[in-house]
Amino acid sequence: MDLQKHPQPADTAPRPADLRASDADRDRVADILREALAEGRLTAEEHAERVEGVLHTKTVGELDVFIRDLPAAHDRPAGPAYTSAPPRPLPGTLPAEADTSVVAVFSSAVRRGRWRAGRRVHAFAVFGSVEIDLSEAVFEYQHVVIKAVSVFGDVQIRVPENVSLRGTGGSVLGNFEVSTLDSVQSDAPVIYVDGWSVLGNVEARPRRGRFVADILDRVQDKVDRKLRKHLDR
Image 1 (spheres, one colour):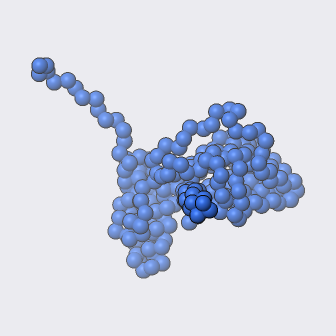
Image 2: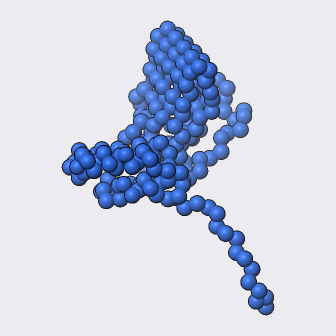
Image 3: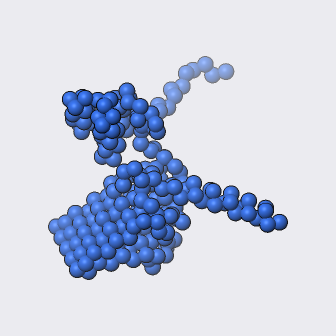
């Protein structure tokens, strides 16, 4: 029997509380503090002091300190999602042609409400503005790629709060900004925003308070179909 002690490999995985906080994490905590102020749980001085502290936090654990005594912080998980999003589909997996195209040339174009988001969406703004709002969309596929191009224009993309969001692109004398999100649900939609802006703006971020329900809808649809099939026998 080998009695010699062998060194055990150190666990280098960071604790959730030690992970760096994102802007979305700070926004979530600021929303909870704002609600607490409106409900009378915090005084104006306490609210201002805590918001100031939130703006200077670096880790998730530091953020939790400011809301741990508030009921809203315990209504749902206080920490962000740490489930890794599934890998991006390989080139050629998704169709090259767009399921939906929204184009604005010297004009404005909007796609919002309850609509079915395909696997590929194209948004082009040339001296115009385009708004793609997915906060109430039905996701038939887990992976959605949005190609956004802005030339002297503006492309605004809004997504539900509980999806994963990724962005790849750049700008020339303009702005390209995508707020990265990680969903707590492994089967949640993953939205990729690819694009460029030339003397324009491309921006993608979550719409607070909006949650995609289609994940549950798909499960319910399957149950309903099985039930109808059983009753039709």
